[in-house]
Length: 500
Image 1: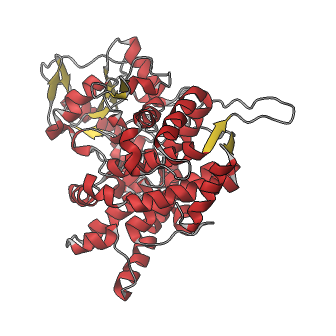
Image 2: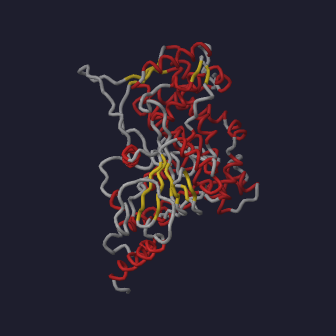
Image 3: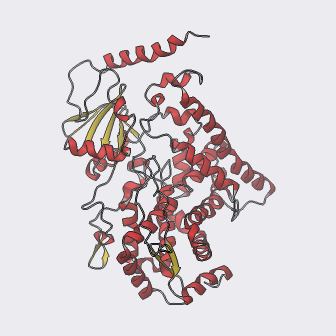
């Protein structure tokens, strides 16, 4: 067995070499940022944070009066972008060099490298989830939304569980052609466990992401607790890649399978590993509330959860949306996709939900392979970037910001940062937006959402706080969800019989 001291010496030698190589020769200045310590740079700035990472980044942006900040994590340059202008200038307009992903060693150790998406994987996803393909999914989206409002009618207190089930009822059949069980579905449970596991991989948490040699450290070595987490992750990642995929393959072989993302991939002659990895990424992303690789994760669960929170905080917005729905839709019908263009306020409300509380508070890193220059600053090769969009009065929920003279204002930027930038934009964004719209408009058509009141008459005020992981959702809260009227309740029940 190697001497334990060797495990500590190798990273130090590697760091010294990297520092020497990267400090030679005159260069343009780096963007501003916190003071760097010798060798380790800003590594200690990420340990024991008292605030969410996104808030720390925004404080740096204000402190240094710059929307582009430079950090050094033990030799790895990180560029933090905190404005739409900077993000679009680099990640969109220069996407040819800013669209790679860095190797995320902790994710690889856990076996979740497939979530980062190869080019072949993205090509398969782009073909199966483009705008035209998303429209073909509308019947399934409508069915899932109607099932959601039925469950909310019968047990409104469990609305978050119903949202998760809706996501599963949509994404699992589309991906694998497997029907979801209404209670304790094993595939949803597996994805949820995997999501909770990968949510631990917050930028800056694991030294192995900046000192790759540590991935060879044994689990017993002091400071190698990440290896235990990685071992647990490998069990989950293996299951999430294979369980539903194997069942889908069995159905395809027996001739019992309906068309699905997996069968489409095989029809297009993609290799089995590519189809399996793309399907697993789509499966996980469709059941969470962010982007790992596909950002409809952000919208199908956490964004809908945020929608409920937004209605509690902004009852006037709820009333305005319901008034618009009532003007467009007859009393004996629920809204449908054909009504979408006549409901600009609802569309603006959905956009504002995505903008108001960005579920992916810290952007998935991009990787720059060649050195670049921006605004007189040097952007080092192999730099990682973080993006966050900004709007006037960003903490105020105001759907009207997207409207002009009663119509959507094309001059106001869509909150597309929720779906990524450049060539890394989420291929599932069209599916996400339409799933979000049909769920929101269906809920508003038949329910009133208000703050819960206790037996003593005290109003339960939500904290409006969010988790600080890479995938952020509101902390649990309660609310009162009631049918708007007796006819509205009957309208919900009628969906079960297929009468709507």
